[in-house]
Length: 287
Image (spheres, rainbow, N blue to C red):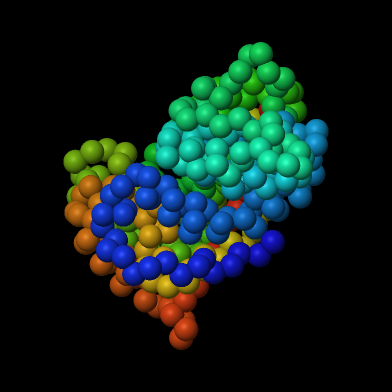
C-alpha cells in the first residue's frame, strides 16, 4: 500500500484548531497517521501477522495500524495516553458486518500497564510504532516500558521498535529541526524537554538490550510524507506532538510561521507538499 496525498482541507485559521486537543487528534487521524502505512505493512508482512496474532499496540494513536492488523485477522489491543485519539480509534474499530478480528478490538486510554489484562491470553506481538527521536527523552522512557509490558507476552514473542532513518535520507528532518531550534529556550530551563532530534545508529538495539529483549532482524522502509497543500502539511506535522515544546517556548503562530517557511522547498508546482523519508524498524524477541 503506497501513501497518497491527503485530501484538501479548507484554509482555516490554524491556531485555534491546533490548540484544541480534539481537533489536533482528528488532524492526526485524517492527515498524518497514514504516512507510516508502508512501515506498518512491511512489519506485518515480515512477521506474517494473521489470525493467530494477539497484538498490543503501544501509542496506538487513532488506530490505523490496529485496523490494518485486524484486517489480517489479528486480535488487537491498543493503548494511548491521548484520550481524543483513542476515541477516534474506537470509531475506526467499531464492529460491523464481516469485520472478523475487528470485533475483538480493545482500546485503552492510559499508560501501557493499563492494557495488561491478567485474565486474557498473553500477547504474541507488541508494537511501538511511534518513531523514537520525536521528542527528547523518548528513548529513555521506552526501554522500561517495553520491559514491563513484555511480561504480558508469550516467550519469544516479537517486539517492534521504530525510528527515523538517517537524516540525509529524510527530507522531513530539516523541517523537524524547527522544533529543536525553537525549543532551545525551554530546554535551557527544563532538562529533557525538547523537540525532534535524529536517533543514533544503534539506538533501537540499545533500547532492546535495556528492556531485556533479543534483536532478531531489522529493516528500512520508505515513508514519504505527502500533503495536498501547505495548510494540511502544517496541521499534520503539528499533530505529531514534536512541536509542543517549541510552542511552549515561543507561541503557536511563531511555530506555524517558521514551519511554513521550512516547508517551502518541498512545495511542488501543483501546490502539494512532498518529502521522501526512510524509517527503520527492529524486531526483538522476549526472553
